[in-house]
Image (tube, rainbow, N blue to C red; front, side, top):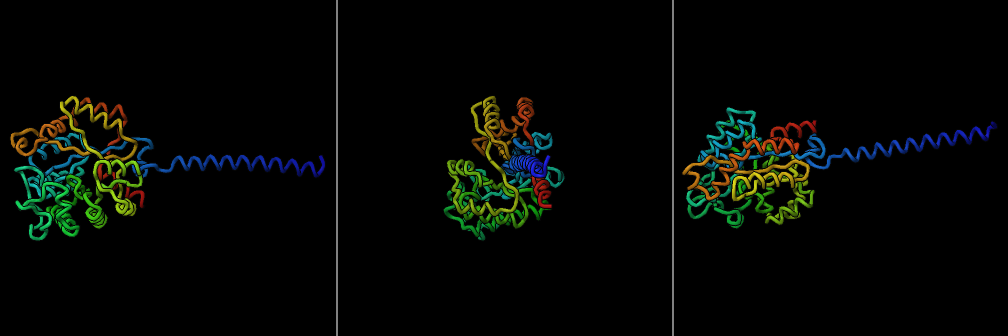
Length: 334
């Protein structure tokens, strides 16, 4: 073999080796693309393609019936999270339980409305300090539009801070904050104040990842005024976000209630989803408070139902809470 043949053969081997290297690099690049987190569940280290769900009890603290049902479900491990309403009569009872059970995930259901016909409450602050939040009866407005029409963002921020500080003064720093009746998402300015306060305190809010246009469109269809300004603001929010947020559907019978909840779970995309509901034990007082008492009683029963528990297991649902979310989130920053 002459020198020219040897050089040519060497070039063939070099090109073959380079091609293999390029293929290996391409394969590694493809693997990197596949491994890129596609939602907040994956970003927090949960397995790819899984539905990670938080079953969350709203309206704790509203009345004793709500506290009893919520505590029963939490102690049994049937739900993962709850939030108490600072202006309401039984708020301190729920906070006392939270202090005695520090492993439980208890937040604040920040409340700027008082919707029931006869069972009502005022603001945490003296009414004269937040007059735009107060209706002619001296209570919080009954509806979200009334709050938006009458209250300023400054009043909203002031009352939100007061509700958080009420909990802290009682000796309990909440694990998260969310919003009763969605009021804090009732306007862009309200939402911005709410999210700023969450970041200031380092307490996660029920903030939804609005980089997903499908999610944004879904909330707009439900009537939430999700403006481009809010979407941009949410992009700069520095605490963990939810991929989705929804609620337990109503039904005409208990059996239907369980089935439509299963249907809801089946309809969810993989990612981190918080599902809210309002469990309460059945009493005569509950029936005088709200016309939704039957749904609430069924929700207290449903999440302890062995059939639904088995369904979650069969579907491979992963459960989480805000404490775990924050542990994972802080780990990603370290």
